[in-house]
Amino acid sequence: MAQRKPMPDNARVYIIWPADGQVIPGGKFWVRMGLSNAGVAPAGIVKKYTGHHHLLVDTDLPPLDQEVPNDKHHLHFGLGQTETRLELPPGRHTLQLLFADDAHIPHDPPLYSKKITIIVPP
Image (cartoon, rainbow, N blue to C red; front, side, top):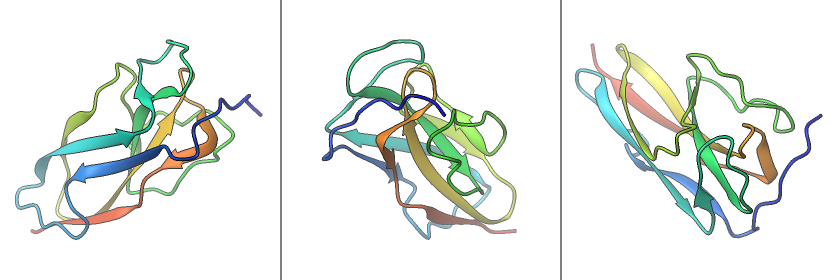
């Protein structure tokens, strides 16, 4: 079990765009990530109340006391990015943000967004 770093109780992470239920023809779109009452810092940078975004695509939250996996369902933004371009095939997809520290470990308390659903028409 990893040592989890603190995060203010009023910190919040959220998906700015797309909206829950958004229909995205063609499946190519930008995801814009939001954060309040905390700061974004690249992986490897240790600074109180900071971390970086992880975008969960078509998956549930991983264990919140371990390093976030790095695969096609757990996208890491360790350079401090707050937006990314995705391309998804036709179908229903879920997106959720999980904010984690310099070592990709979720904070205490964990900071994650509401899970949203988007639709890419055939």
